[in-house]
Image 1: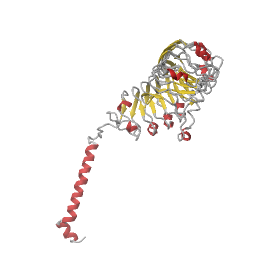
Image 2 (image 1 turned 30 degrees about the vertical axis):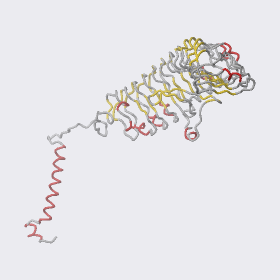
Image 3 (image 1 turned 90 degrees about the vertical axis):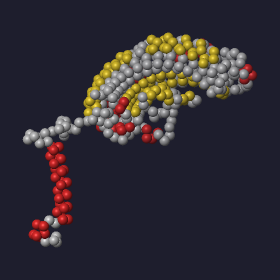
Length: 449
């Protein structure tokens, strides 16, 4: 319990209160509106608070109450908090619909995080007039229907949009081209459908670094020019920034995201500004994989699995020198594995299984670390680590028969064996000839050489 006397401390002057990372379950005296008149920062995250969501003072700018056991709905009094910059109510059991006022109650609102609750219904027409919004996370709820038509169109500062793990049914939000600062886009596990490009709508995405639209019903092919404007990934910026890691976020708030990386679902509590990932898996994309993906030298994670991509694996993937995770499994890819992939020294996870690949598996120090599961399900692949041994081939690519015979009936193996035996006998005879010196040799040449 948060003790009753605590509410009487510095009610006129207290500006910062942090009770996070404790085991508080409730207030000793039930509170609905907290009393501190000049409070700027209130942090109650990671406790065991139960019951309804308390209302912070009007002066509050940063309110963190995530990772608790709160339930009920969000009261309309939140609409009066006109000074809020960050509101984080994530990972509770809050329900009901999202209050329509959330897009206009604070012109200074930078972060709205409501993920991991039980909010349902349609997303209301919020942020129609624009704002300073940088992060909107509504993931892991039960939101349904289509996105509002003018949703976020005027939010020019938007950097992170996470709508993953809901039941939203809509086409790709092409209006995101009006968000020039967008860096993280997550639409994972919804019911989005249709193509993700339009011949008459340009998609800039100059700063996009993390995109996850997996587990939807997106379809169509990807034109070669689709990734050409992704400047944040097609510029090699990693070398200059590795020595001084920077994270996304504003002030007291740190952005987080969950991505599929190296075959595992990983949550990044803080997002490195140099981390890059493209996940288009588990959709209905078809056609060839654009070779221009190989022009994204800063790409770290690429997942195109469980689609209908066909044709060759682009040899341009050998240019992805920072790539750590590559998953192309469960497609219809054919041909050989490009030798260029063997030069990817940072590659830690590779999955090419369940395709129609052929020929020998490239060998390199890095490729030798991948097990059989990385290549299984390709009937015509051969070589380590698969049990199938590759056939030798002539210079023109035709296989050499295992027991080639000449026209006169003599096999090359027999000839080579005879040659070997003759060589050994000749060496032995020569040794005896020189050391023993037979009589006929002595008679003709004498005993001295």
